[in-house]
Length: 92
Image (tube, rainbow, N blue to C red; front, side, top):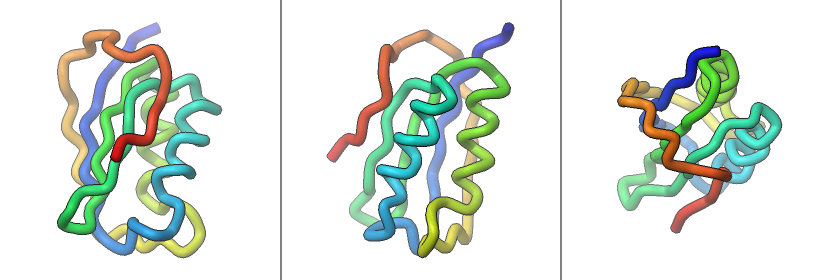
């Protein structure tokens, strides 16, 4: 089983639609760790770590987000896996 880490930037209507909460629930369901937060420029940023296929499942959810979200652009950058997290949090 391979592990990976990705850095996400999500642009569109992604604030005020429970995007962070939905991502946290999806990450926890898939045993993915890291964090998600809103940015001042109306984007959402996240770091995900976990099993390759589990991280991919959360990234796939991110392409659409929860009901009410409109994802216009998703930037996914792979980073070196460092096993930095033990849970998934919503940061302010």
